[in-house]
Length: 264
Length: 273
Image (cartoon, rainbow over the protein chains, first blue to last red):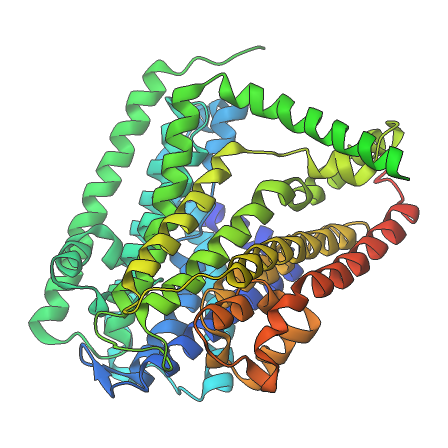
């Protein structure tokens, strides 16, 4: 059965290979936003050399890691599952002799691997070329970063699955999805580095599942988290991952019991 | 000429009102939609307030000044989104072959495309922009002394900026006649342009500054008016009243986009299925 899920992931990886130009255009958008944020931080850091333990170079690395990793973890306006629910195609996927949740998780995992290779790496390289920020951290943090990115990607998939599966109950779930995406992106750190958030807001963000999606992998790669803090962050990620996945499975099971398909 | 312009305006109002009435049927739904949109855009803006926690100034501009610029840009972009969103969806229209049907109807092509996706919920962004401008005026340490010229310039700037944003959408739609993969590229200039214009232009390098003043003149929409309101010198030694040229730049850019669009319509070949 595992081979089946690997095959699902591989086919979604291969499907994305076709859309070379779309990926390039998307990368151009990531780079453009990266440039804007870099100039904003360069201007802000003229007033003081460090903030919340970040200097300018740290902040620019954070910005580029966010732009690089967003499409791996939190592909915004992802409504693929929602659209199958609305069109009724979902019934074919529910009837497949495999687990519905794992099916979508593998599909999305394959896409994430694609974006890691063809979006994340080139985007960060563009940041290195444009702003001379160098590699984000030392090689020895890579194993922890890799583990944290796997957790983060899982969190991103589970979260997107959740706001898509709402379509079983709401006809127009896109508005909910749009809002959920912005909230997630904000508290994952794409708008402002989470260490810059004021007191209570930062605490909420760091305990939320969103920090684990992008902020935790990024801070680990930059060497900002180590020792007990690092272990705690990984543990929190793992706990949120289990919780969101269980919730996703429970909602799917509840939906599958009441699903009625129109037409022939 | 005048006759047909009046007919077009009447038809535009008719097509838009038709969608407004449809959306007004579900009042609770519409209210939550507008409120949601307001909250989402306001969350985006909160990034500005948060950054001015640890940092006192942004290249010499205070939080009130940046917020004023941000709010004006939001209003400007909000109007562009309200009136131009149909153009943004054009790649779909082409791909489904629906454009053939548009061409067959005895009405202006652009008129039909522009009115195809009029959503009242986009009022949420304009409301957010107005709220931010009001907040900014309170954050400015000495307030703002309004004069007739300042009010006029803000109005001209927002209108011109919106026309330029819509022209960008139109250029993006024009590319759809030859390739369907352009929405992401247009997004760079629309959403990216909005983000870029939300921050003072003088933080960017000379190339970007020149591009958004003289190639895609979005900076005329909100940055130059903001400079005028705040008694800041415009970039490249432009005179302080340079912002009043906004309608001219918008007309030139819009005419260019319009010409490209007409060329595209004339050379349209259906997807043929």
